[in-house]
Amino acid sequence: MTGSAAFLPPSTNDQYRGSPLSPAFLGLAAFLTLVPGLIHSFLPDGGAQSIAGLDLGDRRDLVIGVFRWEGATQLALGLGMLAVALRYRPLTALFIALMMVERGLMALHGWILSAPSSGHHPPEHFASVVAVALGAVFLALALRRRP
Image (cartoon, rainbow, N blue to C red; front, top):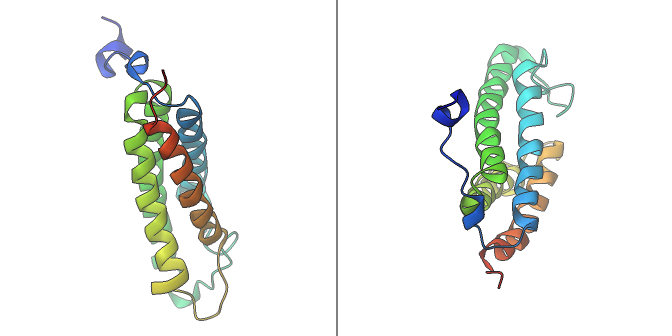
């Protein structure tokens, strides 16, 4: 048994019956989750000021710490999404649905429940709305069985 075979179960891709576009979308979503995860984890300000344009104020360390925490969760989720897109495609619909829950909650907070009083929205607020809409399309495709 090789090292990777012991770490990962065999691929289940041959059992997937949905559209091949859905795992491709999930792979793209994984990449678009991993990149911000790397930014939040390793950029000096976590992207809070340099990308999101936030005023870090006198709680700079706290804000950067929260961004780093988010980066860690994004890296873990992105790697899981990538594993499904590449090796475990029968889980594609589940992972797209989970992405929609995550992004939907982010959009809900960014635009309604915790909308910034300044009116400024970081790029992720816009991306989350788009991700939910695209996710709905690719979720439907993943659930639709091919002949």
